[in-house]
Amino acid sequence: MTAQETAAATPESPLLVERHGRVVTLTLNRPRRRNAMSTLMLTQLSQTLDQLTARGEGAPGALVLTGADGTFSSGADTREPDWRDLSRRAVRRAHFRTVFAALHEAPFPVVAAVEGYALGGGLELALACDLVVAGEGAQFGLPELGVGAVPGGGAVHSLVRRAGRGVAARMLLIPGERVRADELARLGAVERTVPDGGALAEARALAAAVAEGDPALLEAGVRLLRDSGHLDRTAALGVENGYWWQAASAASVVDQIQ
Image (tube, rainbow, N blue to C red; front, side):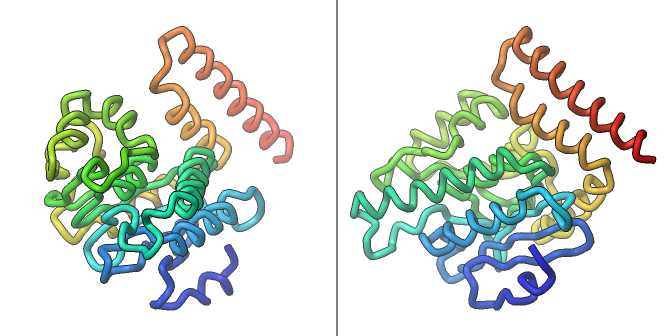
């Protein structure tokens, strides 16, 4: 992402891109729809993530995902004219999968800054990040069953793994159920809470601190974090061994260059 491309974003764009040092911030920008993710927004998000995660000069040290005007995202935009058209839903679904895959493969840490609501696909987007910083009153939920869908972006898996089956069951099965950020923080699905309105500043500060680390070690660290949590101990130790050698090899190359 070049400085020119960053500067080209306009307030009317469904996705805003900003760079501060080694930290890039992506802002979901449809505040009148509580940042519901339209097909256009998902297209831009997947394309931008593809650019940012490409290795090369100018790659960020960390990424922050947030939403405009005090709301993270209310999920997929169910008011799009063709919402019930299965072929069009398949297109949106493909974009969602591309976004989640890009976040999982990103060679740098990703921090979510959540205020207001993170519902459905918005919750899935937040939980796809490595760290979640949230205003203490932010509310998380999975309303998919009420709109003729089921979660498909990893939210149930992430909730069961990070917060427990009980919370996943409440959010998935009880109509209108919302869980506040401070409860999810106690359970381990949110890493840090701050007074409402302070999530973005805190997330950017956290991302800047993390981005100071060695890029090769950060990449090994985030891949280890993402890949080992669901494995049994033997398999997890094998994954850790692989990333240990990857980090050691990268450090050896740096030493030789210096």
